[in-house]
Image (cartoon, rainbow, N blue to C red; front, top):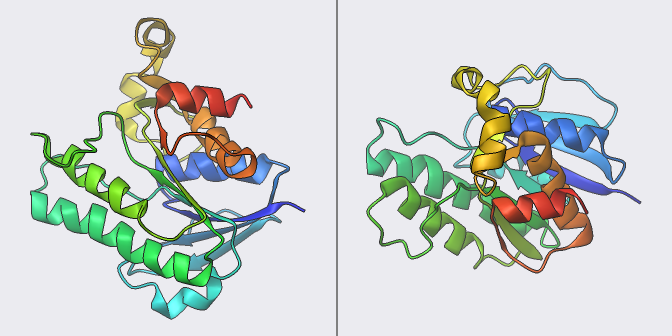
Length: 220
């Protein structure tokens, strides 16, 4: 028997890449994507729920029962954003959604896409890193079966997907060079997706998954 997975953020670049790997992977039986807008995707494994308010998942909570994992890929850039607003869209939103999910599926493993250089102390100078660090720390306090926080750096997009951030096209040609010069900063979006799948199906001895761990997990 394969596993049942919830994915958030599937209309963004990271979520779409993770969804792509889940639909291809034989260990995944069913994927529920929860989006603010339709993804336009169809697949035999795929179910979609449209819901605009991620701070309140209670109207759809019955749809979130009996899932084995959540790949939480929903997120925003902190560029040009004040800390209060970034905190609301990163910490508050994530925690509200996670609390509903663990109440409906206490056997769930929760995988959160964070970022390289996240500040686990919550005391550093970087605003986004502090907020991400608090989000990671408080997710790990929830009674999920297991929480993994993934800290990717640059991710080379998966060819053929439609939601690639346009800024990435300025850098994709540099990937072969960066892979040699900065091996602990760059991965592919495919490696991230596979590492999340392998974490929940095969297990891993760390909760904080850095770039080097993403590469190890993706090859298991």
